[in-house]
Image 1 (tube, rainbow, N blue to C red):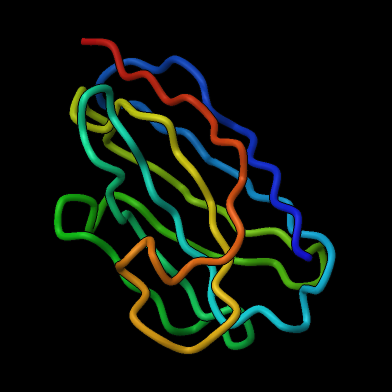
Image 2: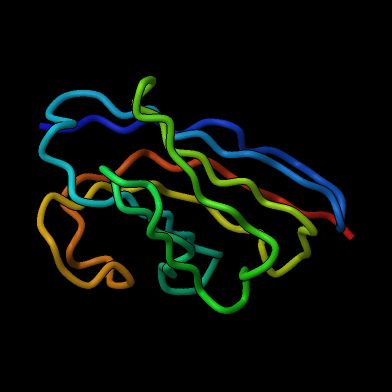
Length: 125
């Protein structure tokens, strides 16, 4: 089992920044990759970013956040971060972190085995 707890969401103005954290516990040694997803009201859950758990050097982003968001991890603290800069209204959503235990496509939510409870990010204009 893997437990994930997100934090760091909140209300921010357009152009502002937030840093989300995802605390990971349990069978962390079995994790292949960590992903961030988001879901806006009335929309499907969307891939945002992913990072290889062991190396931390391989990262992936959806085009809409490239150059604005940075995913990173601190393995000593078993924590994954999502630094979000230049936020706009389209970034408003509930953000989830997820753990994938096997190697495979990182952009599909279907391959992730464990999910956090989500944290709300609201960007006001």
